[in-house]
Length: 304
Ligand SMILES: Cc1cc2nc3c(=O)[nH]c(=O)nc-3n(C[C@H](O)[C@H](O)[C@H](O)COP(=O)(O)O)c2cc1C
Image (cartoon, rainbow, N blue to C red; front, side, top):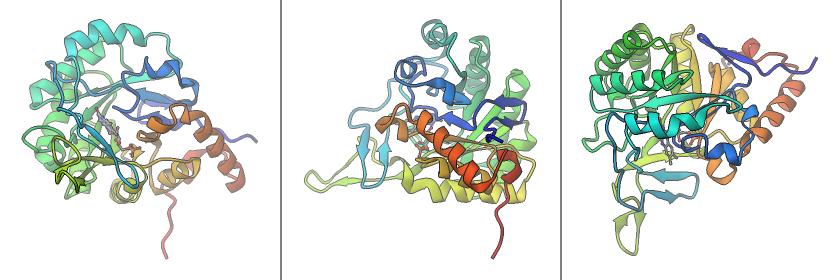
């Protein structure tokens, strides 16, 4: 039988396990002009805040030997403009679009999530892990702060809610548990890792903001570790694995570690239409491994 790549993620049904990660496919509609969205189970728009955010000064992105650094500072028009100007462009796309909320306090997250629901998004990710906020504090470093946000947002919207965490979270299982107990329908593991680079001529950081987010193949072991540890401790929690996905095999690795679905980000900068190749590779690997459904191998990692 041909492999079936459809997966479930909590209340959501995805036609493929592949999700386009927030911030790496713009607001989705622009990217849809160069990508075949039918290969994606969902695509996540760039994070939106309650008010407009200007973002950081350039340089905001820098290549590294493996992957990249970014310190965009979540430039976005704010939720009101986003609803008026961006969301109308998202109708009729060939995959479901999720929104992503970022804010500096609980009420801000709630306001953005409600706006994203009004705008017709299929789910909302709560970005508890952006490394580019001015005070440097990440909600996802604290189980209590994360739980407060997720509890209030889950109460305020009927959309499926995902909590996106940082691979630098000191107690990833504790924060994951707090989010799940507060009503998160799924977790996204993970956002970028904290990273830093230096230009030896100017002796300045590669990014204007100094420390930024490191992404791409170099973080796959970090994100995979988070997926593995959370799945081992909390097997019923639904997980989107994210970090360094470059091939169909990477998707399978994440599923074996415990992910229900898998997001790819940085890859889209060099290969905007990566979904076609990834799903073809995934199906070929599933055929080789004699796997008909991904759910049959989820969390099946063995021990030595
Ligand atoms: C340039 C850039 C911008 C990003 N912007 C966001 C964002 O707005 N919201 C968010 O939740 N994640 C954002 N991310 C993180 C990605 O969604 C993803 O979690 C991370 O890059 C790890 O996956 P990857 O290694 O496949 O890129 C951004 C990543 C990059 C590289």
